[in-house]
Figure 1 (cartoon, rainbow, N blue to C red):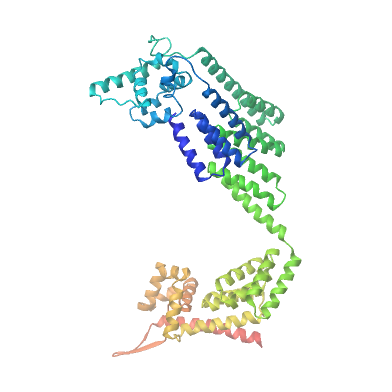
Figure 2 (figure 1 turned 135 degrees about the vertical axis):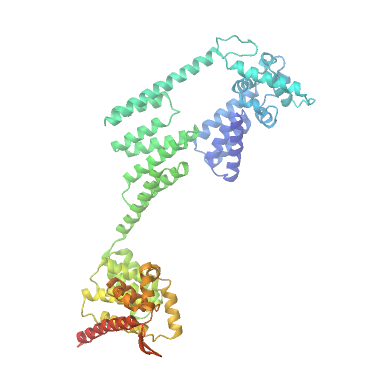
Length: 570
């Protein structure tokens, strides 16, 4: 009962935060009914009906509250009623729960039953006068101030309470004081027994339905689940199981009805959140089966979101992600129109010629929405981004263009140009060389190779100004590939050998992978090659011999590329 009082407080806070939620008033009214605050229950149900006049649970709740209010307002007769009827009123639970001397009594089921009996009929008070707990409760309910008890009296009170609780739990066959132990009414025992029998029978019907479901005998399963629902309408698993059968049979409308009913009934009965979430997930799955266009996915996605608020189930989360992905793909398919895409691309080309690059980007973007597989639109938009200085966006479009059509030379010229502008000359050179494999005579690719080689040779000869060198080194240190080379223990040893032990470094230079990494460091400005001769007192010595050799090989390699380009031009 103390839990009901706490729940009542939370519900009042709920309607205070969200006053336009009709279901909140329905639950608040039910809480007032549980506390026998019938007048407050009537007010709560009426407020809910003002928001949602057609809500059936609110209507039935209002009728029950008004009937209970009428019964409680009828005059009572009998000795002592006028004295104690008010004490056992609706606020009795709050008073006892707030007082530290009686709060613990509410955790004892036998004492709660006594209070419920006295609420129905205060005349039964004489049956419990020997219970020390009841005497203390009366003092609290009637605001009677008592003197502080001594330790001895407190001990007697606790012993009496413990004795009453233990005696009430003894088997019926044990001897007990007829005054202290109130036997249940025969009618209550019969009702409880009948209720248990119904639940047992309903579970048997459910098990029979499960067996039929596994055998794909759906009609028989429906019959068993329906009978279980008729016997016990408090267990929503019968509804969710029948909904699963309807789903397998393709009766989607019936499945959704059962799911909605299970959710509504589960919240009224305060069922496990997992069961409510299961019903919502099944509803979402059914709605996906019925979806014919992208908009049909929206109610299914909404159902999955609601299910996750009840219980975060990994399977529900996976279904939600799949539904959102399928919706996006279907939207693209519905929007797909190659003819309109070509028209938009041509409009973009016109704006590009007029140097109106932002407007050109808009039309290229629309073209890609209409046809996401068009490499030309990606190439053209990459060119616009390059003109606007949005190099990262342009690089993404160029790479997407190459991905869609690896033989399309424009994709390589776009990516190579962007890499060049970003001063990543080694990567730009690789892009141009890769493009030449597909189109060996392409003038833009050939010119790109020439420009990259010139910049790389400029770095290798040490012709960069201090500012250029500093800028290039700072940019290179942000490149993960350069960082990996410099942190590689093998390359660290190679660099040390190049400086201190040229003869032993010759073995390293024969390795193509090592030479390629050295070339990247040179292009980045991290390593410079210089031919230096230093005279010493005892003769001349060629210092850093391997650096000179490597510089010659690098120069020779780049010179061959330049000669090939010149031959191709002729």
